[in-house]
Image 1 (tube, rainbow, N blue to C red):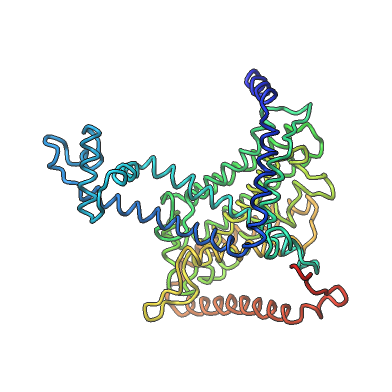
Image 2 (cartoon, rainbow, N blue to C red):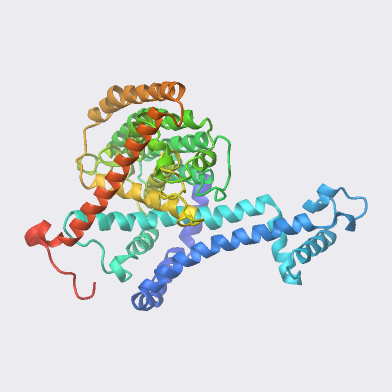
Length: 504
């Protein structure tokens, strides 16, 4: 408590709130004309800049690794070769000079500033910090930024309206940024009867596990932060910690609606983690590994090689996992922990400002993680649905991976604005008495199928082609319905159809 009092006294005597408001107004005054004049260019530049930044970091890593290999060990007499390559056991000047020799051997002119700038990249700790803060955090921040805007647009179209159209220009793409600035400037309130330390730490207990889940999530064969042998177990363990933050948030708020939301969260997420984990074991039985990178590499060669079309047990297991993942992410029709019609806002009723936004960051990031797991384990990972033809690989792997994950996120948004919310007793009944026995039967059936049906045989091939045809038909049907709706969009809603405003 002494620490809180000292911090409170510091903030009371400093003009920090006034400075924050003044800075926000200044940024608004300077940025508004630019945003209104070049909205599309700014959006495209941000996307291109982010992709280029990731590529440049990878290039720097390759250059430094080559320089370390090319570093001559004989320059420092008496030092062990392995220690010289790492720059350990030699004085700093000698280490820098050795590194410069390695750079020159790689064809990089080791001028003074470049030599010292690239030297820290030799160490794993610096690389990890750079990737975590420069890539993981940016991506984790970009996913909610985009998904929140996208959900508003999807909700608007489903309800025969336009959604955000003004802020930022093109279809209101900067609406999420405006909301973020608003939330940062809002006051961070703590209820009088709340358990203050737990109340303040709860939002971070929901965000940090999701960020850690991205550490082991592969975006491609060589696009993974930490390639763990048990990456699937690690991600499931991190996702299981998120429920702790939600329960603490509800309990520490000293609000009956928040406590009800926390109780529902405890019942729902802990229950659905069992069928969700069992459903993920079905492709593990087929591949024999818990490494997501290895599972993804096994699905190359077109959509007929995806695990979801391998046999009917995996096909149904994929559907079961996706339904369970909706409950794990608190998405409709399983959004009971925060049901606005019953509990005001559920577990985060008493939160405001920045901490309130952290819960949404965690939710939308979790949506990407569970969708990405489905993509890696069932839907071909980062491989194109089309087989390579004449050496043409149909695009980069990470692009396919993100595109498939976003498609599953779109399906979550679609379900939210289509299906009604079910009762908590129905949620638990569907888990314990329907999904859990079903997934256990699928896991057992898949084990016997893999044991008794030889891969490449007649039965295996017939099921593979039949399920692949069903998958292709579903995708083509979706595209056809979307095109029909686009062409006849005014006829479908009758008198509600209006043209866009002139400035939209």
